[in-house]
Length: 116
Image 1 (cartoon, rainbow, N blue to C red):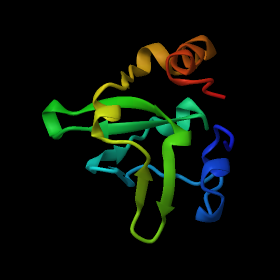
Image 2: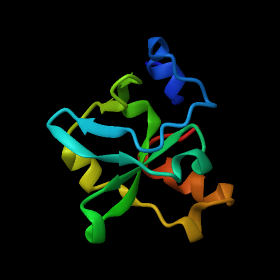
Image 3: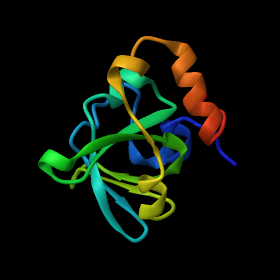
């Protein structure tokens, strides 16, 4: 299996660590799940933060970036392996807890793989 970094998973997508994927639509194998959150760039290359739900009921969840199977820059779309259930059961992202503290990123990785 390829590495945990987004660029390793989808090498032909033209994505580099400097690309900003904020706002890209996110689709699982069984339909749309949300958009890439503004917090993705803050958390690091091993994870994506996805904004799910509708306006006032929305929440940010953390998923491993190695679940990305395709990035279409023209349509601003990320495709994930797995289904919507993976997003529903993903850990909720709390910026006050997770930003700037590597211990919390390690905890995320511990629940969903290595994370690095």
